[in-house]
Length: 256
Image (tube, rainbow, N blue to C red; front, side):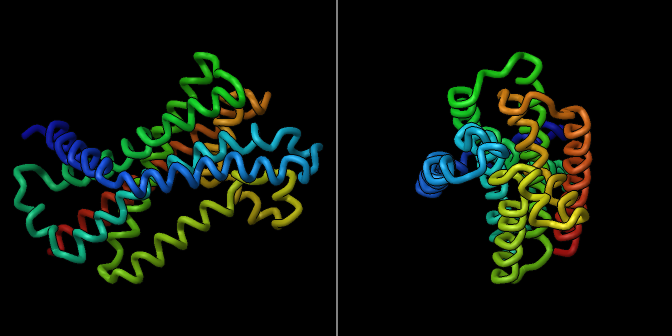
């Protein structure tokens, strides 16, 4: 079996399994939509208009980034279950290279995030603005890199230990750090009031924050953003996390 063919076989399996979690998907969708409309309804007349003139338009692209992150991150739970149940013994017998199998898992998680995000990108186009062709390309590239980053990060965490409680704790801790220490809810000007400069630079340069800024610019909420530098930084995140996840997963398979 060819490398790409083998990787796609693994990824398509993960995509088909994704639809079996329809109740989780429904709950996740409801939660993300609630983030858009409830937060906007509550905070639109509370936040300082000098920082956020329209909270609904500010929040919607950020939620698109969070939605992608959550869906791509779901692959980590399945990898963790396989490790605890020693399903990897069976996976090693598949007629494909280990590197193709690992890439297929990462690809499957990334594609889950892309599929799940489509509705939120449409929502952002309806609420904020329809992007131009050039900006739509930036949005697409951002989605690809963000989903690969988050899928890889989830797999790296899940392969770090076989202990279920520790896996769950690490995933939850990572999720909430990336969720709340980001610019999804607040712009850089507000974050600068709450964090020292060193921490602020970390917060605004996480994958979720970078993606949120690019989405806001892509859909027309921000007029000027250094999209090229943010895309390049997101690419570095994606390549680094994908490499680390691949090495961690391959190490786990080799130890079996």
